[in-house]
Image (tube, rainbow, N blue to C red; front, side, top):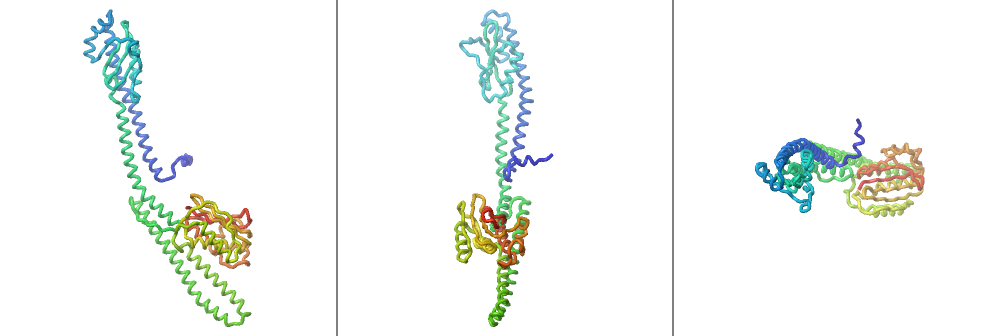
Length: 439
């Protein structure tokens, strides 16, 4: 049997699910014990006790038979009343209204009345005003007889106390369990927060705690984080070292070319400049999103600066719309590099770039659109891979590169816990690149 339908009704958080696992059995246990106690034990005991009281009342009524006056009847049953610990008197309906009085929480009273009416046909009303006293009103030939007896002879004393006691201790023990469960789940929450922060490019202090299994998971996370940081550092150092080593022969080539005639040196100078650009691209890719620490940034102000710098560089860039406001934890240098790469690609393969910003309480979206040829849907995944050059989709003659532009942007987006999505611009018809980051 599939349980997929149940997932829609289950809470999503770990704390809520643990609370449900803790509370649900307690509630079921209380219901089962309460219903079983009320239906089995209390009902059986109450039936036996009311039957005994019914026989005693019948004996009193039989003793009264043959009496001609109320005083004679009361005198005839005086000894029986003393033996049965009852009180009797004749009452007038006009002087004392007959009402079925009972306490609202006396849930066993209806069964008491039902059993008494079944055994006493002449019973007019039953009053159970307190837990110590019960009044029976019976119609006789001499008038309305009121019998007063101890309530404890009809049913167990305060049967609701068991339910109250069960509920009280259930609440107390459940509250204690909640406190203990919260302390046990807190290390898991801290681990999830540390992992989520690291996924967004932030390293927050974290020390393993809690149960043995949680500590093991925390230590494994710390080891994994250290290995990733070490790998990123090694990659950066390796590519930086290679770039640094290659700059020396490039400098010598530039010096040698400067001594040649301009006509002969122009083609080789172009090759040297292209090699210089390739080295810069490798260096940018090696740095990735690790440059700078996350800080509170106003995306609108940052985009205004990026667009103004792009305009001064001769690019046709414009910030067309801004939705929402506030600050976001970002690495401004990395985000600047990502947006500049998208703007550079837009003006390289198209004529202009339009940038828009949208902020919601949960997400930040930076969109860059162009009017170029765009990228076909089946090649967009390939375009995000490093060193991927889509010549049919992008005119390579209009720019040089090694296919690292979109890869760098995607790497920066992932380092912020986000994603880079490529699509078709509805307004300009070219490529639409969205950097989506969770706030």
